[in-house]
Image (cartoon, rainbow, N blue to C red; front, side):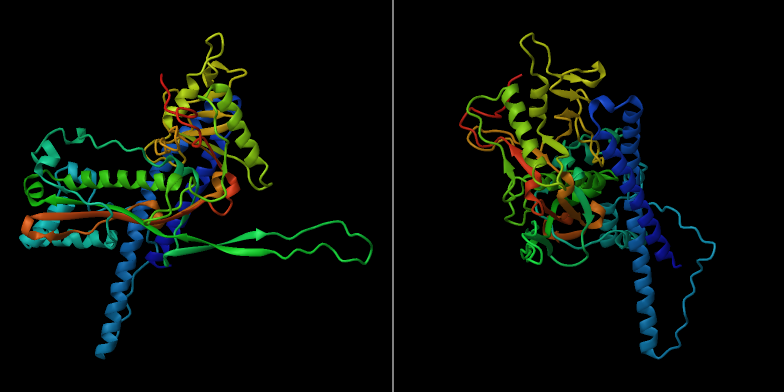
Length: 485
């Protein structure tokens, strides 16, 4: 077995572990609140932590696979060149017997930057300006680890003023504060698959008319016969990305690791935008077609007054019934709410001012909802699966600040109910955004460019009846408008 085959085998084994742990985490957190013991809650927390580490290992293995693929490609090219030149080709022996593949650090990472080692931008600048051979060697190694193709979607130039004190060496660089992002809770609960390596449109066969069955009227008479009809569901592959123009002064006068900070911010923006498109992508202007805009999904009727605990409970129960009645293979599995709607629900009280939604630790009885994570959020460092903050109608609740809040004339926030397994999110590169191409395209302005992007595709159109929206079509000031606490 070649080193590349060993690496690919390890990657498949690692992905199998991720799938197993993710399934176990979802199983635990989908349990009714009265069945969740402290041991199960601790196990779910351990699974989340383990998944974060496994995803990091997966990212490192992907980089190693690409590096080994590049090595083999170079060797194949060299052999071809020798044959073309008429020289005797000497097979290259690479010993694999007894070898053990170990983890290898990336050329550029935050730890190295914090230890004062050179960063990507600094090396790129020194390699071009000073012909620094050590920088060129690190860049060459890095280019084997990362893909360098694609295009960005957003542009805004930055200067030394944009980075404030970061352009001056600081002892407390670890205390920098990135812009807060809302992550991708919903994208983490839908079914995730690797994106095929080629093509910009995926075709998914979808049955529109099924076969029939009925009692035979009499012996020897014809059985029921209805021709099946199938149609292709076309799912576009989209490119999501961003770019940042950085001044030469920020590189020359800035601290090592500045590029890593910019990349982290770009990655946060990428994940938030991808999650937003899963929920509410328009399907136009290069966007995914999100759940909200998918044709034929279920939607609750409009409120005729300001929302109350009773009317909200009734409409959401009706949506559970609608989806549960769609077919034997469709089972509602998750609620997705904006934080303001979930905490509005937790604020509701009965006529004696007793809360209707109770913390799980109180051993709730006759509760409208169970609050499993008081003050919690479903965004946990891109954890997969995300944290479930509670239970509503017996189903786990994910809160996601990407949920639209200005829908209709209310304007209202939406509540999503779904069978999450019936939506598919295909992602390239294991879901990790591709980094990055250095270009000094604006040399006359001493400007350097940084790009981050990835390819993805999403559909909820295979089974639109597996999804439902509550809210969004009430009259002004009615329905799920912004609550007052």
